[in-house]
Length: 206
Image (cartoon, rainbow, N blue to C red; front, side, top):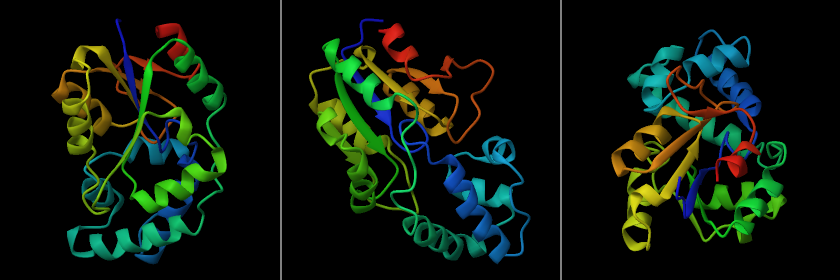
């Protein structure tokens, strides 16, 4: 693929937080009189960006979105540190570095919370840059990734983005980067997507 840099998604891709997020989202849904997600399959089949549309599909419309999102973020923060990494994540990051490939982390999480999520796993040194959003209610990573790419030495075709949502795929397409969907995260990979089920497949791709 001629890849010189990998831009990793965090939540759901390296951090295995999907079940925790489902539980927190269910707490929000019950608080608003909506049906909770019965299992991970139901959650993953519904999850998508924009987040407002995910909430709407779950039964929480625009009139209640901000209140519900604030509840979600607060209750999720209470569980910071509980989520493990996906199997082999640290070893895979080390293996990618050994291939001479630069690694960047991009997350739709606010900087302070992202730092607390990263801290138990001691991964920060693996990344050349750590990119995060500025607005929790409009969690788009496009601008921060585009800004990094513009100031980097890499052409878009030399960058591989690895993520678990339609938002990650749409960013890669818009920027002209490669994309691989990690199909054990927050959203089911579409049938036509290039996807992986195990992180160790990334080294095989390189």
